[in-house]
Image 1: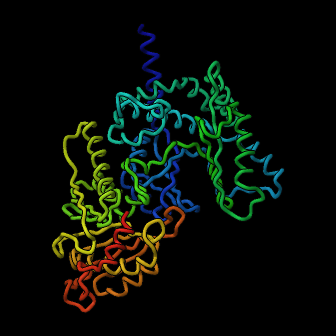
Image 2: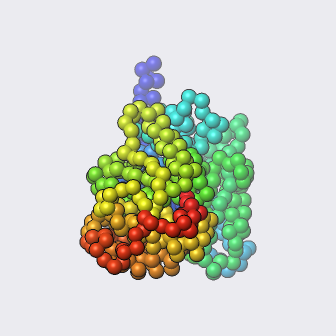
Amino acid sequence: NLFGITINKTMKENLESELDQAVTIGATVPTGFEHTAAEEVQEKLEATARVSKNRGRIYFDITTDKLLKVHQLKSLDNLFVVVKEYDDYQFKTTKEEVQIDWQELAAKLPWTNALAVWKLNNSIKKKKGRRKRTNPTKSDQCGNVGTKSTDTVPSDSEELWEDLEALEVKGTQKDVSSQPENDYEEEKHSEIQDQESGVTPLKFRVTCNRAGDKHCFTSNDAARDFGGAVQEFFQWKADMTKFDVEVLLNIHNNEVVVGIALTVESLHRRNITHFGPTTLRSTLAYGMLRLCKPQVSDVIVDPMCGTGAIPLEGVMEWQNSFFLAGDNNGTAVSRSVNNIKHILKRTHDGGSSSGLPLDVVQWDLCNLPMRSSSVDIIITDMPFGKRMGSKKKNWELYPLCLREMARVCKPGTGKAVLLTQDKKCFLKALSQIEGLWRKLHTVWVNVGGLHAGVFVLKRTAVVFGTTSEDVMEPHTATGSQKESMKDVSQ
């Protein structure tokens, strides 16, 4: 018994030491908010993130004991562990030569650490699913990411040890570290096959994302050829839909990154359960909020909240500010209320009895029920005139929006962060009241394939009502203007 205890203790020490193993994590982020995401990584993980040449991706090095915290970052959409990076991969000039290259590459890649992280990640996801509710759904039992359970992630070393015990990592993995890389990978290759012997083999797929015009192959060609090589190396079974492992092949000109996906569903689906036709991604909402730099006791207003994506994201991160959300559409307000109820239930299930510094109101944007100069920050997703409303109606709506926002926003210190794809109309409306707002900078983003701008504005020190630019009272909108408001409501 004493011998057995000693062996178990040694294995535990070995496995816990593996927690300190350094790995490179890749993440997709909203295009345009790469540097904002890098700031969050530095702030919360104390890791330096580097922005990829291919927009919408960042990379950072962590030790595996921080993997839980990575899933809690608000800026990241999808996560993957990097198997290998090539900054200047020399592609051959013919398809046949490239195909041979893919086959050789799969056999010599250092898969070991990435697969260990993938296993650890699976155990974390399953544990999150078990904690989330007593009757887990089929997707939780399969180990999908539990998007509703970020408040109940295990954090102490004993829980991590329990997770690692479930991985069935063999002690022999530590004994071969001094062997040459190729021999080590061959042994790991055999070990994985041994672990899966007598059990249904792992299912996998390869997803290729390619950018560049100097390749002699397509994304499908690369995914097919590299996938075939991976299948031959591991003896896994290819399955494009019900896969266990997703191997990622990211190619941007001569930059090649091979990785293993750590998320099945994007992390941006974390707070919203009741979606509208133009619901903003939570990761994009968070990026906009970081541009505001909310402070303690700030009053933050989303006057066109839709389903409440922005205020919900804000209230989860900046709980010492007060958020007020509103919309003129009753259905949108109902969706926001239901999303708030979902968050409250989740926090209460996690053991918290506190409420949220957030309220939702149905109102007319042209006549906000608020005192002048009472708001610190205004942040909203304005109608693009695509799915909601029209470009023509925006020419009436935008000037009214900016005037009423200027009325309620504090002169000299107030800020506005506004997202729109209708850039021409917005800039024209802004020029009409430039005495009330000053544009600080613009972040260009991709929203559902549309090139949009996040405009960061500063409220000037001019008191509303004292200039010729605000003589038209925004809260006396005409009937046609009110109809425009209804049409473009989120």
